[in-house]
Length: 520
Image (cartoon, rainbow, N blue to C red; front, side, top):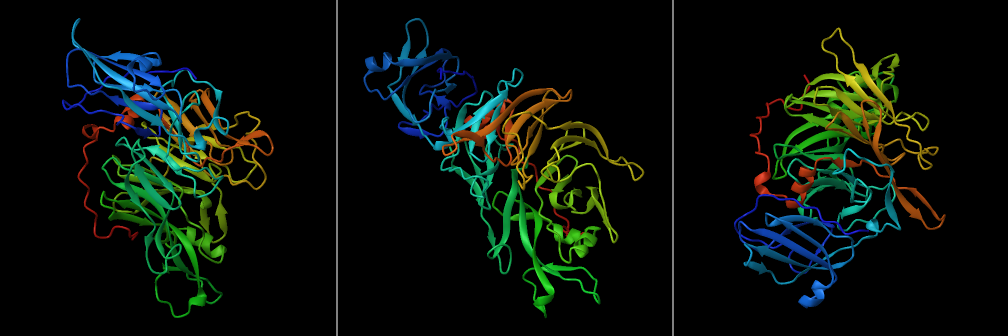
């Protein structure tokens, strides 16, 4: 792989700081170099040699990367993981004033997930438009450039096919950090892999699972006010209807009941907001919604509470609404924030006679709202035959209006590995609106293909994540749940530098009304 150096000039502190620190092992190849000089009006240069050198002459004979800049911060890309590197900085103040630093050393770490003989992001359609984009593959915990080269990995990741042990929903936060969930816990880390914030399953008597109050799953995000929002599941007790008592009753799992044989324990989805200190400041419980909505008919038909785990959400802070997706009932619920009342819902409708199919989407796994106010979602399809699709939808403007699909794209990308196997879970997936009226799509577990498509239905980039099967001697799909994209070079640079003074101003949190979480 050829050695590359990408230059970026940014603002910097008057106090000179050196990075990478001497002897530091890095989990990335795209590196922010902070040079050991005070602010000046001259030029700065770095030189990098592959290998560990203490002798200046030996170093000079092995320099493979050099670059100059007007600032003392430079982003450079070294060629390989698992290597030692030596570097030196030079400051040139004039024709006769030159300062050279001593030799510094760092190394890049290595994990099997960045071994191109074992794992790869194979590019099907190369991009000319989004050259600066990078892609997170959550199952591997790896960030790839647009040409399929790994540039960052999450420390400690071991790929295990389609398990909760693999990271899920890795993405960039509004604060230049990375959020993800793994093994029912949620985390925020920086570019170096240091944990900045985390939340584990909360303990509580008689709740889900193994006495945990909240089991985190599917999606975890940091909000632009500095808070965190996560999908959780808690257990509830559902009273089984009988011929003499058809009332549908759901109560908290730690409730005291006179006859426990009349109740079933079921999982119910929650949407939970935490402040920076890990305190719950807002919560929305699906079981309170189910027992007062038409979904109670569906639950009665099943002789118990339907699985109402949520799988994605979108928080429109400006409009103060939340869109919450429920795969198993083919429904998206629109919630007023912070009041918690349901403004509308889209998808299947239920009554005592059965279900009225929406024929728009089934098993959807991502819901977003575009800049111009339309909804767009990734629809997995309800079985292993239906082709996944991308939908752009206009919401009803009043009670007389109805949901309308404005644009649809069938996600049929031809590839030898793009074949759904019988019984395979149609799960996962992601969508993200990009500049230039294009959309990034992650097809999730059943296909593990990601692509960028414009509104003219032209595929601008696509890639498939693969692992080498040494037994069968062939490349097979990596079952990635939800890939994400960093489309803007400035966002990538911010992740690398993670400058505190570039953080968005934390907005004052709106006061929660006394009846929040209720649905009267």
